[in-house]
Image (tube, rainbow, N blue to C red; front, side, top):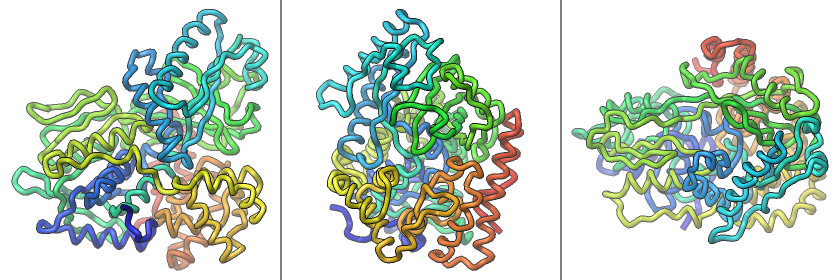
Length: 578
């Protein structure tokens, strides 16, 4: 059963988690230490905690600060994998998507429809239509459907559904359904869900080396990045879920075998919702010569992407170039009636996909390999996982925990197909209260829906702050999409320790407003300062660091090569450090 203790992430809970890590000695080790706070690491911590294991998860920066906050924000089956005849992967992803929609995270994941335009009347309708028919059929095997069936659209109906399409070039379309989510919030909620089952969790806690007894890894030496203190944390099993940093961590561990992970850059841009007219919750998917282009409705703007290019620079400094932005605009304009320009771009973000290569120097090492992800014992006591797709994070977490504990904790099956994430239990009930919530607090329908999808039943905790202090019910002056209460709640319950945590991941102001949140940073920093006890110098340093980081990203967006863009981003840090 879940712990009855607080399930909040904040400075105090971080201190408690660090104390638990310090207390994890060779005589009293953790059962599992998870290294990496992206979706795979958070998922592994949640999976292990629900099995009743003593678990801690550490992250060198903020939760989801790498790839897991920079995706296309979709929970989808991967329609394009059908072209590769990878039916097993698609079936698995569709099953996981439906599980999230119906049971484990209905407050964080919602259905969305996509229009797939046809440029050739007969050939494409037959070819793509047969693929989507198979896609739909795979969703109906052995379970109730979570989303509607696809439908073919005539030219007239297509233009009614998505009037921004170029009706002269496009002869018809097909509409089908998948799902979307806020990637960074999803990871944070996974971590909070792990806390609900007794896990410890600490951001800004870096692994500086791995502890060994003979050739076996028995934990890690950690550094608290907030204070510089280093200490040892022992564990029976350690799980490495570091994404594109997997190779670096294997090197730190001194492993002679390991996973080979390459990085591929994916860039997205955002434009205002009124710039591309369409019916609500409907996007576009189309193929390009290199990848797939999505035009995705999100809140009051569109997310458009993505690119797929090798990244050879430091993974910490991934950035969009001017050429990346032009590429996305060019391919969006290939299907839109009225061309987008650089002036339409509100913001950008860039992330790195961890692409698995064949296992290096495996020899007799123990491995478990699937098409999309690999679990491998890189040293005794140290199990690594890499690859995969966001939608199948739960399967990956189950696989890596099964593998890591098979000898020390046999007979402890995964519970995550039946255990919902925090905020999901009772979600239908609070959704039925939507009108009453809106009336009481003076919210319009858009804000109420947004709040419900951000918090689920935890919205009651946010509203309680407003009941205590009505000023917290006011929107932020320079970012009215968010309430002042949401900033305070992000610090008290969602683990935001620095201004950048809130600007980049608890909100998404770095690409939701044209100034990338620079103006709003003042008011947000004031609210955070009161809660975290910042003095004026600390508060100003946080604002200064964030604005310098924004300027560095903007400078990167004016360059024409990855090396130049990475150098620009590397000139500033998200978080001020002495």
